[in-house]
Picture (cartoon, rainbow, N blue to C red):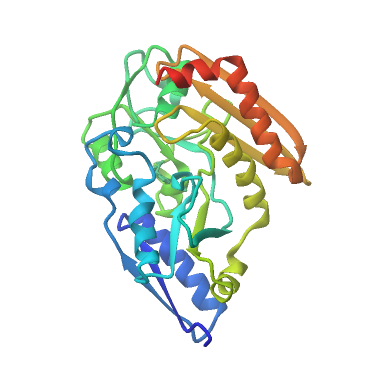
Length: 305
Ligand SMILES: NCc1[nH]cc(CCC(=O)O)c1CC(=O)O
């Protein structure tokens, strides 16, 4: 029987809903006659907003509830921010589609200062990502980094009420939610190497050929090639979001340029490595790069966290 309805399990943050609606709109436009519905769910990661993610079980919390809904037959697909997606999928599920990437850079947002370098000594920067903390402090050891979690709107509200002089968060979220004017500086990868997969959205679903055929036009091969390499680095480093790992690739004419970083949360030590090679070798390049990082001291940093 042909598929005439697809149910999308989604978290309820405005960004998650935007991403689910993005997939819904594309699917409905591609397949006239197909009905696409959203199934909004609450994940533990969204309930426990005051606790560092590392303490409540890591990023996987955001996807588990959505996976449960698919396995129980309540939903057919789930739309994820790829940087929150764990490396392994439960039996029966997989992630065959990676959509075109939004801007992968981190954003510097402030109501008073034009960029990271313009902050005065002692200024307070909000982020709860050890990756951002480590790189902000590596460049500006005179700043203070303070804990900030919550969805995009919550984080901006805390900035606006004066809790921070600036915050750092993913550009992709702000751009999707039409808040480009909030971004004072797109932090270049040389200053702040993004998280593996940042800015990309993926679609997880049951292993089902006819379902996958409907989703396939949303797949972006270039983004998938970049993420294969980036995720290989993170996987080899055993990285969850608790660890300060940055990893970013660019693709130019089939040539992949992959950069990786592991740092101390206090910014005192950062270990970097990079590789260039054909995109077809991306996964092997990622593993190789991760091994160079480990051999150059990343092993000690990661063991101490
Ligand atoms: N960890 C939460 C999360 N997951 C994905 C994004 C942003 C959008 C993206 O990377 O696609 C964010 C917010 C942030 O890091 O500021």
